[in-house]
Length: 293
Image (cartoon, rainbow, N blue to C red):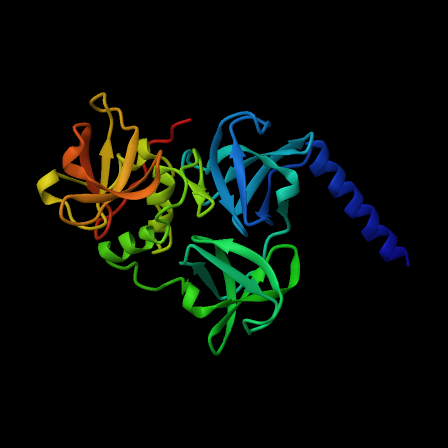
C-alpha cells in the first residue's frame, strides 16, 4: 500500500513538472496521425512542419496546453527542428524493438490483430516509423505510443529498416503516391504537404534523411546541371539567384514531381525560367548544412 502511494505521488509530481514547464527536457512521442508544429504557441502562427504518429520529440518546456519541442528526426538545427506542438498530441514513447517498420504507402491502418477485419486502432501516413518486433504471415507487429499491446500493419504497406534505399525511380514512384494531395505550408502527409515535405518524406521512406526545408536541401548532396539530371535528383527554383524558394523531384523526359499551389503533380521543367540547379543525394555522402534558425 505504501509503495502504491509513493508511486502515485511520484506520478503526480512528474505530471505537474511537465505541465508547469519546470521539467528538464524529455523525449515524448506523437500519439495522433499527424500534428502541426508552429513557430509560436498558437495555431494562428506559422506552421513550420508536422510530426507523424510515433515520431519522437524532445519537450523543452510546456505551458498553457502547448509544448516547446525539438523534432528529433527533422533537421533545421543541430539538435532537431524547433517549434511548438499541442501537449495533447504527445504521450509516452513506444517501447524499443529489434527493428523499425516504415509506412511506404500514402495511408495505412494499424489493426488490433493480424487480420484485415480486426478493429482499426489508428490510421497512419507515409513516413510513419514504428518499432517492429515480429511478423505474422502478411503482417508486421509494431509498438505504439501510449499502448502496451501494440498493433499490426500489413507487410505490403511497410519497409523494414535496413533495406536498400532504392533507386531514384523508386523514390519518384513513392512521391507519385501522393499525386493530387493538396498543398499545405509545413505539411508532411497525404492530408496536406508542401514542396520540401514531399522531397523529405519521399526520401525518408527509403532510409535517406534530408534536411526538412528546401533552402537547406539545396546545400546537401552533389550539384548536377540540368543536362545531367537523373530520376530522383532534387531540382530547385527561385526568382533571386542563390535564394531557393521551391524544390521538386526530377522524374524523366524533362518533367519533375512537385507540391505546388495546385497540389502534388507532374510539371515540365523546361517551362521554368527560375531553375537554380539540381542536387544528387543517392549514392553520395550527405552532409547536413550549417544550422539555421
